[in-house]
Image (tube, rainbow, N blue to C red; front, side, top):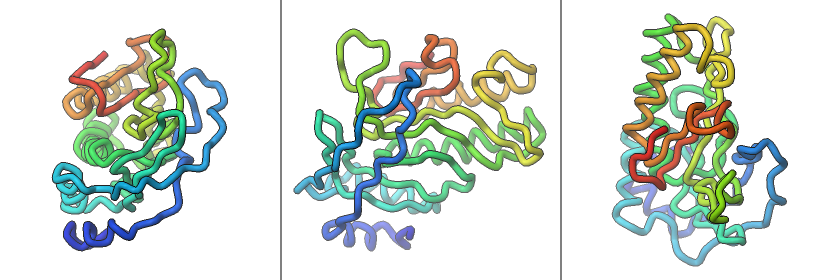
Length: 226
């Protein structure tokens, strides 16, 4: 249930001990099965203790986004979900949402509201009734990287968006739409451009073969947009 006010929510966070939610990132960028789920350990550090995280919670509340706050969790192997939430309702149904850091959730919700829905009306003359994703949290390394560094997915700080379902039944996918009909290309490219203004890193089909079928958004970069 969404808190009615940020102060009330913050007062409830200290005794919060919700069960872990790790169902989001079960589709890896390389298409392989995910790593075996590890029972998370709730951190002794209370969630949303910093002024920045509290402001993020207040921003979500002000935007009338329904969400559930999660306790800080550690999954082993360096993977974690700190100051994370579970999005319940951003105004448009979204599939496969697991834990997301609050800044990622806030920016994603705004992107759906202020980019996805208006762009669908403008370029496709239709309403978006569902956003499909490959998930959020997944304890794994950066796909294709040589450094062995953990992906931002391992910190619940990334989301992969794969398709958009329209009210008339059409399904606009990155796989077919990026080089498909002109209106679909325009729609997807506007969404890519808008995302570059909201997320730290944005990767799409033109970045590499691993991203041919989805947009990758995370808050870990510094304006890298491809």
